[in-house]
Image (tube, rainbow, N blue to C red):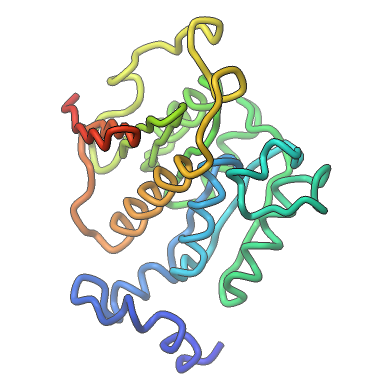
Length: 236
């Protein structure tokens, strides 16, 4: 690929003293795995790809449904019924043809988690259930991979960076997964479509900052209530 082509595409972020040519090269060499191509995964992908993350993996076994479309804006109505992972890969590749995009059209399980996650430098978890979140966390701990964590409900979101350079992990924050029956979720309680865009973009921001060695969240949980713009950081 042309150096000129890369410079023209990325020059507005290369101009930042905190990024520069060296930072852009780090972004180009980075390998980031996004778990879930849904509400959070879509905005994460929509910003990591144009930023030039050299290799992006997408894990999702689900298919596009009509009720996804108000917040999962990588997809369109005529794609309802198609697999999210492969459809997201195609959309992301169009956003930036200079990068490599891999799709894993399968459910992340105890049997395949290590083989998939081990190929990437950073994991971004946009999953929507506790069993997957804890599986991702525990696999990242076992492999020494940093994890960008986010969750959403209604008007509220959470964000943390876990297991990065000796920082704490999800089990230090929440030792055990709660019973799913005791926890509200978007399927039962709803979510405003813009919220995953806000939290997902924040997750992408922390991922890019991590890649270029800028200061990121450490042993801190961000709680963001967008209904009243209440922003809180909790140490853990």
